[in-house]
Amino acid sequence: MSKACALHILVKTREEAEKLKQQLAKGADFGKLAKQHSQCPSGKKGGDLGEFRKGQMVKAFDDAVFKGPLLEVQGPVKTQFGFHLIKTLYRS
Image (cartoon, rainbow, N blue to C red; front, side, top):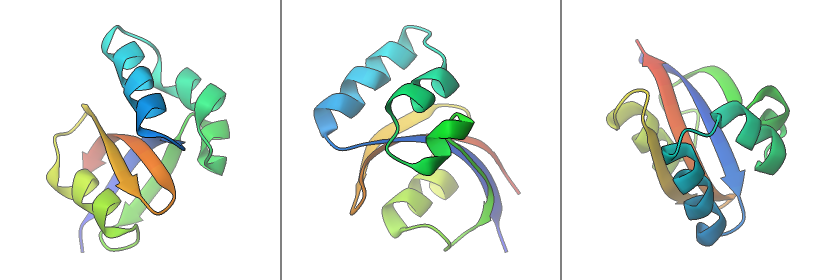
């Protein structure tokens, strides 16, 4: 069973996610932006979701984590929770 570790920032709108992604592209700290902007309780931990198995997250999120590039910010990824920026740290 595949496992991964990822960070994410969850916001309500695509526009907000795009603005944060631009800040990240200019070198902003992912953890600091997660603490300031994320609507998810993980925001308090800098967006750290810890390790989880394939299939534990909603499909769009799961696909980004398990099929997308490592250590690059992906998104905005839309789910029923809002718009995510996702940074996959590792997969095993």
